[in-house]
Image 1: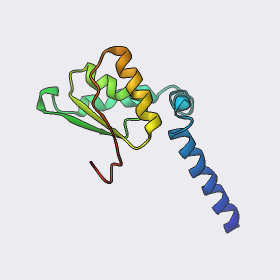
Image 2 (image 1 turned 90 degrees about the horizontal axis):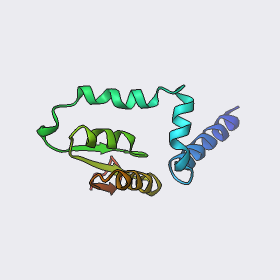
Image 3 (image 1 turned 120 degrees about the vertical axis):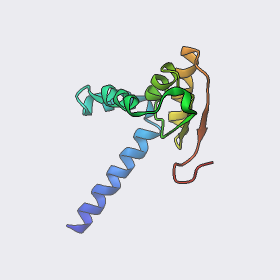
Length: 114
């Protein structure tokens, strides 16, 4: 039984590694499906708990595909995005460029801030 549990967790870790990297282009769709469409509402709900935009810059750790990052910038926040996945960084970079928003993204781990 322990063997099966170990195999299961290895598969789960492998699946998440793929989702956050090589399959990052599917992340928005996957999160929408597994949340039954509520993912974006959950993301946007955080903004009401933040201090006013003029209180200084925000660091968004694990910015993912950039949807919350874009919401924050459009709400007037100066946001710096940090993500370990170069794939997520590339997607966010493209989304920001398409909207003409400033790019302030860096690659790194939340546990080891640059």
